[in-house]
Image (cartoon, rainbow over the protein chains, first blue to last red):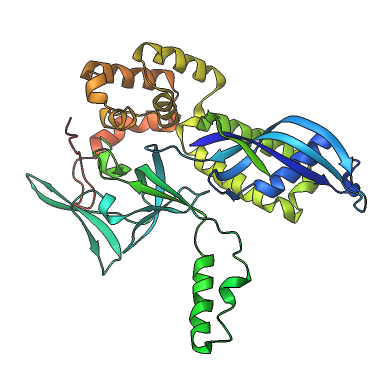
Length: 213
Length: 156
């Protein structure tokens, strides 16, 4: 689930922090910059593991702060392909089952990766597995808050860095299309930078209560 | 910022859990840091991750468990990823082992799977509360409404 990532960065320590131990000040700055943030194609950063190397600190003209190049290792949440994870069902929608791990929320299990046959109950807005045995058909609901075991089949990284002014230039020429463009921008801003696609289509996967013997 | 190696090492849940608990202790001693707005992200992710990990088997493990587990797994010839998953999840059933070990039907016989389950249960400490109540739940679990299922036989 977690990997160690080696990174290099230049850390700026402002003069009012000069009284602190350099290691502590740098650790705090790195955590401030990276904790709980997604790095593109790397994963969700959790916390600093250790500092491997500190190069010389420099003070540049015009800026009283010191700049230090730091080599460090960071703990990152990045499950490998086909890894088994256990999470809680956040909710169901037509797009699939949304699962959350508490610290990471953007996990989706699309309808085609659910145990077959599964139907979406519109009234209760919940996916249910129609499990058939010799005794008859059982409807197993995937309720909110239930623990679910799933396999990671894919990951999607989206670069959410700001796109710049070129996307908004169409405003003055076509006033009618400006409001939809604005709505699209806000919809795009809600894209998760890191999404996991899961699957529960194998025996043993799905709600833990289905398989506890 | 430059990423030198995006996959320098794999960490077990236990190691991350230890790291976060130690970090929490250190931060408790330096009280003024907690209240500065810049540290809010770190607080959030630490709290949520600790909450998640404390409910997994890694909360009951200790440094000796890691060594014992790795020595116990030597004869089975499992890949690093498979051993890591077994260590993080502590599977109790054959179905779970089949999920975590690739091509388990070809690589492991039924006895080897049972042996694995036995070793995992012995070497890795489980939830002390659950161990006590296991006998009780087995006797009660007889008539459940159709919303939950009794037993699903895994097709081997």
